[in-house]
Image (cartoon, rainbow, N blue to C red; front, side, top):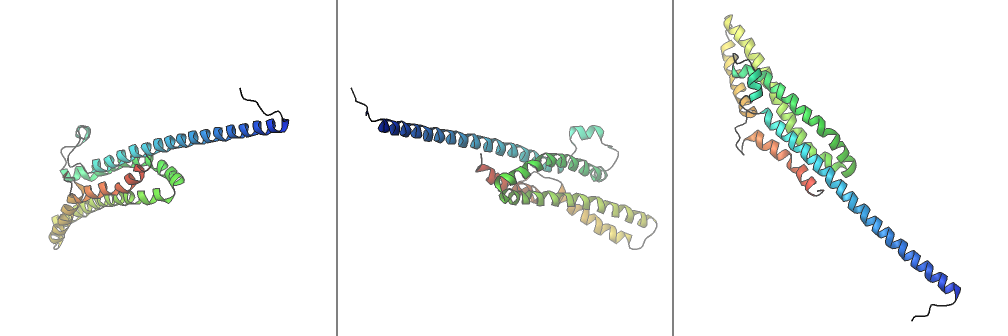
Length: 208
C-alpha cells in the first residue's frame, strides 16, 4: 500500500535512523533497569544497617537491665551483694554490646563510602552515647574499689574514713541511677540512647 523510497541513499539513511532510535531506546531501558537495580541494592543495604542498629541499641539497653536475666541467674554467685555482682556483670554485658558493635562497624564504613560523611555524622551521637555508658560502668567499678579501700581504713581506725565513705556511697548511688534502667521514657540514659539513633534512622528512611 505504501511505496518505499527507491533511492539507495534514502533507504540507507532511514535504516540508520531506525537503528539509532532502537539503540537509544535500548540504552534508555538498560539505564532504567540499572537504576532500579541500584535502588534495590541501596534499599537492601539500608535495611541491613537498620537491623544491625536495632541489635546494637537493644544491646546497649540490655547492659542497663536492673535485675539478673535467666541465664545470668544460673551463673551468678548469689551469695554476693547486688553491687558486687553488678560490678563484674556490667562488664560482661558490655562485652556483648561490643560484639554487636563489631558487626555494625564494617557497615558504617561502607555507608561512608556510599553516602559520604553523612553516615559518619549520623553515627557520631551513637558513639557518644555508648562511650558515656562505658565511662559510667568504669566509674562504678572504680568507686566500689575506693569504697573497699575506705572500709579497710575504717576498720583499722582511720579518722576520716567514715566521711569519705559517705561521700563515695553518695557517688555510687548517683551512678546507679544512671546505670540501672527504670524503663521510663524520660529516664535520662534511656532517652539519650534512644535519641542517639534518631539521626541515623532519618538517614536510612531516605534510603529505604
